Image 1 (cartoon, one colour):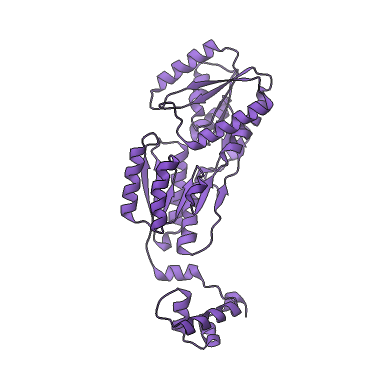
Image 2 (cartoon, helix red, strand yellow):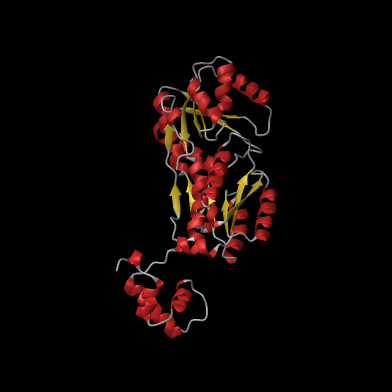
Length: 355
C-alpha cells in the first residue's frame, strides 16, 4: 500500500490494537502501555507510515504566538521589507492561528534589548526570531530560551555558538569580498576610495556591516594593497543638512576620488548629494533595494547595489518556525541568501517581494 494512502485504521489492524491507541502513539500522548506502544511503533515502521501533520495541526486548532525582535528603524529601510515578508507569512498561514508580535530595540542601547527580551520571556511565545545584538547579551537571553524549550531563529547575523534553530542572512564576509571585486572592476586605476559609514560612538549598527567591511578589506589587501581607503562618517541621528556639509567638505578636499562604497542601506545619502551638487564623476557601490537607493541607481549616481532579499528573509523566518513548531518538520539550520547585484539595466526587474 502506498505510504500516503495508509490510514490509522490500517496501522491498528496490523498492530492488533485500537484506533485510539494508534492515535495516542502517533501524537505522543499518555495512557499507552509499553507493549501496545511497541506494537504500534513496529507496525508504523513496517508500513512506512508518515502522519499528515498539516491536517492534524489544522484539526487541533491551537493558537501559536511568535515574537519578532528587531531594531527600531525608519520607513523605506531594509528592516521594513523584513517586516512585510513576516506579515505576509502570517497571512499565508492564517488558518493555523499564527500571531506575530513585533518588538523593537535600539541597536546602540543594550538596555533596550534587555527590556525587550524580558518582555518576550514574560509572553512565553512558541517561537522567537531575533536580529542579534552583541554575543554576550544574546547568550544570556538565548540560554533562557533553550532552558524553556522555546526555539529561535537568528536573522541578519549568524552566531553558531548560540545554537539557533535556524539562520537567515547573507554570508557577510563573502558579500563584502564580492562587493570589493565588483567595485574594482570600475575603479582599478584609482588611488583612493571613499568608504562611507554611519557610526555612533565609533560603532556601526550591526555585526553584519562589520563583517562586510572585513571581507572588503581582505579583497583590497589581496588585490589592490596600494589603494587608500578613506573613511567618511555620516553620524547616525544627525540632520540631512549636516551630511551634505560633511560630503561637500570631503569632495572638495579629495577632488580625485571618484568611487565610494558603503555597507549599509543608506548609499542614497551620498547618491542624492552627488545629484544635487551635480558631481557626475563619482560612482557608488551600496546595499539593499530600498526605493531611494533604486532611484539613485536609475539616475546613475549609484552604480551597483547588492540585494539580499529582505522580504524573503522575513517570510522564511516565520515559515521555518511554522514548519518546526506546528508541522514538527526538520528545518535547514543555515540559510544563506543569494548575493545579487543590481544595476541601472536590471533594477526595474528585481522583485522585492519574490519568494
